[in-house]
Amino acid sequence: MKIYQIILSIILIGAMAFALGTICASYAVDDETMEQITAAAEGAAERYEIPVELILAVIETESTYRPDAKNGSCRGLMQIHTVNLDWLERDFGRELDLYDIEDNVYAGSYILAGYYHKYDLHRALMAYNGGQDYMRKMVRKGYTSSKYSRDVVKIMEEIQDEDNI
Image (tube, rainbow, N blue to C red):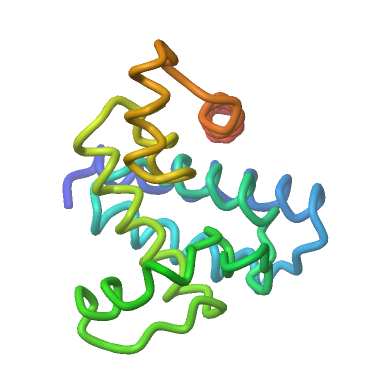
């Protein structure tokens, strides 16, 4: 590892620690749970080549960092709809527990990455939130973003700003 990579890693770790403290103070999330969430988000970001700040912003928007969040048929940190469970388990080659931090973050990031690498950021978030048909319908109506996508992008930018302090 080159010296600039080591320095960059140290800076990023410090910035993530600062952001972690800010998040824990803002939400009723204990340090251990937040560390697990952050580690899973960093791993998924690297695996699926998407920004860790994007994953954390989706988690904040969807569940406010609560692994046990449930809304209708949506489960866990990234509020994965249970209709997706069969194909996700086929793709992952194993059963998934949508309330498990690592399973949920990796599965949600897998879905998100598919859209992120296919569409612009707002369209990717619209598809993540409502499905591709919803996103296409909104685009046909002339929409380039949604309240959800704007909210996630705003949070993502706030996390990035915290990382740069």
